[in-house]
Length: 355
Ligand code: TXA
Ligand code: MG
Image (tube, rainbow, N blue to C red; front, side, top):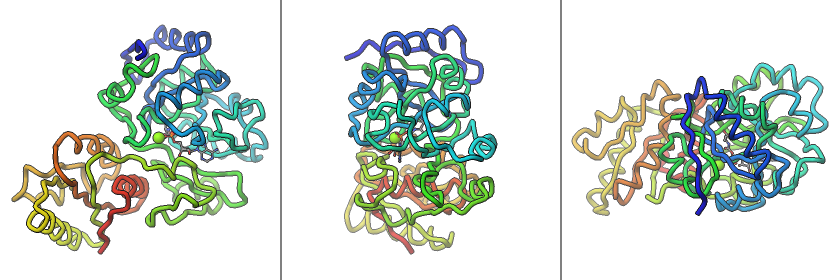
């Protein structure tokens, strides 16, 4: 067990002294640091410190072939971590960074293989959060996956960071709740046509417009098989999953959704005799009010950003409720909705009732 140092900071105006201290430790003493980003918390180390990078994998119990995202705070860093950067990359990316989008580029030869999981490519992003931006300004590029133990939902609130990382990471910078709640969109730019590897907060519709190019979007709804090539290696692992089994009910029609969710409840309650919880939108929760105690409201169907922000929190809460199964309503796959449904389906192990 490691003695974890905890620093509580104002996320929008973090204490410079705290960040300087963390920066010194990262650069001089091979340490790992947990920090907030606008998406989820990350567990980071200086990218050229191989010992500290290896510790990230041990702390998270992460397979070593699952590469890390390199976080940068300015374009100068980009040239230290990537090569053969497309000509117009900086102009385009200026419109997106800092922000919740990660690009796969050709790896700079100096970047350790431990960071890239042995791949010739590297994932890079500039987070839109004052804490990592200022920390990285001081330390240089930081490699960081999400700060959860592998397989658990990414932490979006300090409580979940402490549950997973206290006693494991060297330092925790607690900057309160993250802003968006789901991990960054990942796009591979090393192929002729850019390819979406992971849906995230930055809608693909907007990305196409800014890149001025088509983007290949795999069918995430199906459940990607482990053999699916060219996808983010991490996507093949079981992810986001609470211990409690989940069933997702999906329908493009609002009324059908309520009808079929009720039907699933009937089966689970009366035939299987299971204890259950329903995760529903504010608008539809009314429908299940006869079972009010069993309903968690995850947010408004008309504000998918609210749903995204609460998603991982709710998935972790389910495990504390002592139920046999959670029934979750699906949401429209528009904008950030694509990321929400991608995470929910994975959390359910593709246990989906689609009508
Ligand atoms: O929002 C985020 O992206 C958060 C915060 C902390 O920045 N980070 C995050 O990291 O979600 P992680 O490790 O949980 O997810 C990174 C994903 C993994 O699925 C990994 O396989 C993929 O990025 N990845 C990393 N390098 C890659 C590469 N060179 N090619 C393809 N996929 C890569
Ligand atoms: Mg992760």
